[in-house]
Length: 234
Length: 229
Image 1 (cartoon, each protein chain N blue to C red):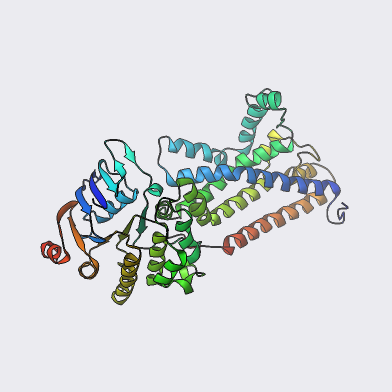
Image 2: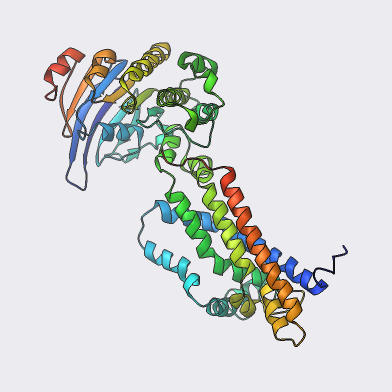
């Protein structure tokens, strides 16, 4: 497909496509895990809950470079997980777009869990009790009552994580590197362009694009949240 | 044989102790007592929402709970319909969606009620496409009653279902309840602390105070025993 080169150069279009691909993949893969973690933390008291909370929130306060370094060590070809993935399944994570998606997922996961946990906390647990009294098992009550009632929070969490992934830099450059056409997302492309003597024009275009994307994500999130807003209190 | 046999003991962390034994042999039994006497706890134990530390609960010929044998059926297997004080209609479903929810998940061995007949008896036909937020308090309770009935229960539990309604509306909703109980002959255990509801609907009254059974009898007998008349 011919891309309108008046707006962006082919390299910049590739950075945009890669950024969207990485952010979407990271948010989609994170979603089921974040729903599980958010529900668990919202509804249950258990031994070691504080430890689970700390582990989930850790990437939020750690420098992204540190998160990226830990991922690189774990998922590198000689790392404990990376050696298994590449040796047994032939999957290579580091220096691929999958690595960028994984780095984004880890860094944005706490934001997604927070939004989803808050949403479940706002749903009166007696709705699930009522569903069980009507013959629904625990799992069915979750899928037919708790999940639909928490959907505003799910949408908010998804969009927040998506937007955060679009801007991810530190962990991504550690795990995926900065390979043009393969792992160079918009933030990495801006960084690269600002280090080139004639790159300021391109950097400004990508900065503008980043602002546009962030605004679009926020507007979409707001619209999706408002589309259906059930009263989740009894 | 009794419809329901209830013998349970439970001590709450705050010190409140519930120790209650009673049978339900009538079509419309009222559990009567002041606030905090343990009425809702009893209902929650029967429905499976609260697990007593010791006791047995039998419904018809089935064991719902026997702590000595480690038996405790989950709520969805008990075939008990519950109507809550604040109705707890699912806000994301229409009235029809709420009514069908219980019907779709009905235990195949439970009663089978005809959907259209339930809609007619409770006069909720014009409400089917509405969402709960657009219903009045009385309409909500009628839908909640229909939802519980359509789940095919062997026992209907009602936890002060009229408490949030004003007095004229209580009479109207109670009339619907009486029609429904008469239509399908479903044994009902009705919790209240309102004497008017006891006099109007009860066939048998079980008195509860501070977690203990203090008497049982016909409405006149029971109300003469009640200390908070």
